[in-house]
Amino acid sequence: MGRLEIEAFLNHLATDRRVAASTQNQALNALVFLYRFVLDREVGELSGLVRAKRPARLPVVMTIEEVERVLAGLEGDSLVIALLLWGGGLRLKEALRLRIQDVDFDRREVRVRDGKGRRDRLTVLPDRVIGALRERIRVSLAIHRKDLARGFGEVELPDALSRKYPRAGWEARWQWVFPAGRMSVCPRTGRVGRHHVFETTIQRQVKRAAREAGIIKRVTPHTFRHSFATALLESGYDIRTVQELLGHRSLNTTMIYTHVLNRGGRGVQSPADLGRSRIHTEVGRLHSPRDG
Image 1 (cartoon, rainbow, N blue to C red):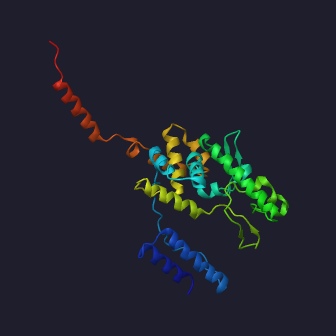
Image 2: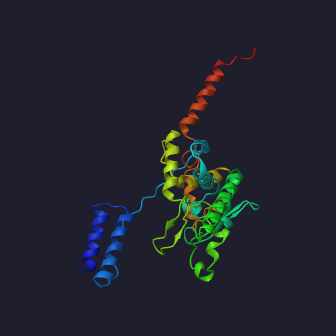
Image 3: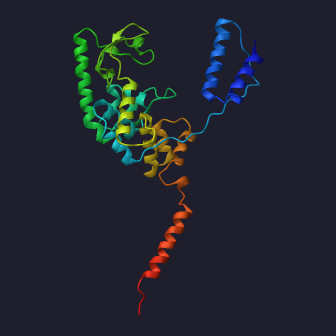
């Protein structure tokens, strides 16, 4: 079997099984890997491939009141991280991978390194989190000093910096803002060190807080980022500024938040509400005492 059979199978997934675009892509990648590295054959160009359509879904956003209810159910690292997501529009991984040198308290800035698309960017540091973040960094440095005293303390560095600067991984400025509670063994290098807090820990805490707050919407850590973008647009900030803070490569990605602004569908007032207001006006006029 070759190109024609692969196309027939992938088209069957898209048209008959109606699978998601990600499922079809996974099947395609698996088949290409099988043919290239196991069967030692190239698949060739799949010119007759029918792509599964990726549905255009609007992001779930919370109102400011709902955000505060969720935050009220968080504490410790979970609360500080959630405030960074909500106050600075960070992704969860971006917040967890923050280094001590990435937080500039004087300029009220957070530097996001190697974000989505492998790009750096600057975003806002909310005043509300500064006190807790200073304390979090103090604790992180104390943990680092203890690790150094035990003969550990080296942290994983991005890209090839560890080869260019062999001792940089031991420096305080490169340590995680949110280090894990215990050391672990890196599965790639075998190095014993301290990783940052794991994503699942924060995800579970946010899910629990939203449930206890009685919020019916599906709330995840990423919902804070969606809510950040929407709140900025509602406050009157231009969409280019929001695009830059979020780190979107394309303005079209940021434009999706214009569809979920807290103004009703497309910012239109329903004619049913217009009619109701007119009726109330007429009723009030009829029941008001007339002069003379």
